[in-house]
Image (cartoon, rainbow, N blue to C red; front, side, top):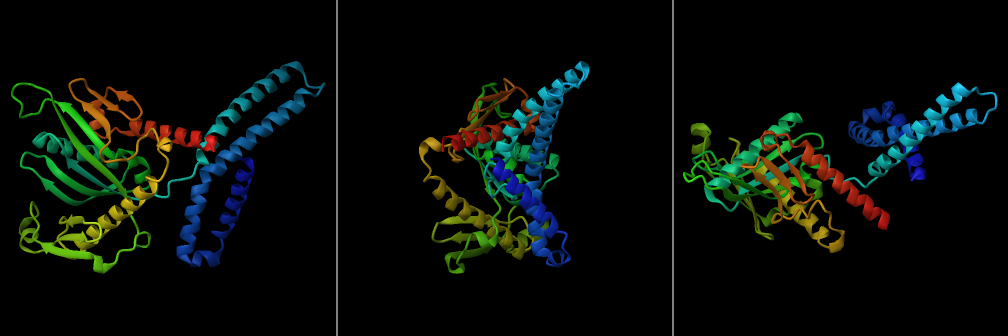
Length: 358
């Protein structure tokens, strides 16, 4: 591990020199790429420097403790410093192991999220609307931006299905574990008898994909235009600005009607299609991984029940890691960090365990 860290530190210093080179700065694309590499290495290098500093403290303290001329009081201070440095080293070594884990190449990408009402009729659609609000509030707390790509609403304020993009640093790394079935248990507003109903909503999280990552043959596409429905004034309803794209080899269909411009809707629909095709490709690769290697955080399967929101008890339970929190109101208002941090920690622990077994 320490050989690898020394190599990374050397690379980091070389990159620092290169991004200060006027010739490299002149080539903005290369410069940005190198700056990104340098930035990604910074947490590892800083942690390694902290490790070396504590290692030096131990060596210096040991040398002075062995010196017969060192007085007793000073030896006590040195011993305390050495003990503290040893504790720090044990902690830093674990942190370095996590920092050196292979990084998901999609972690820094924007995300396309899809929320669909499942079992439960109108109540499922209402909860789909609640989940969209929850993710919107979480995104706002992170200073990310949200762009609705397509939406199908019901008259009572619910959402049959919605596709939206969240743009921001690390959006996919924080939201990737949200894929799956979200179950709600509560008394619907339309329920006169006060009975608790159970409904489900499906969430899909896809990384935004660049053109170069997925090749699409234009001959494989069937593109239709139609009039947008819903709010947006006269213009949105009178012109055929909405786009429907069918990918003939897979049968995938994507629609976008949120923009007034047909060109913008087509661009957004192609983004959604690329992400869906990339997702299929990734799932095919993941299915080849041995069953015993599946992470505790879950398979990411859309049919997997991942979380229950029980309103009468005020609790949210994530079934993948057995975490229950009694703060449903805060969670529905976008306070998701405690759940997301726990999921990330479990995923990291699983990866460390797998690495140790190899």
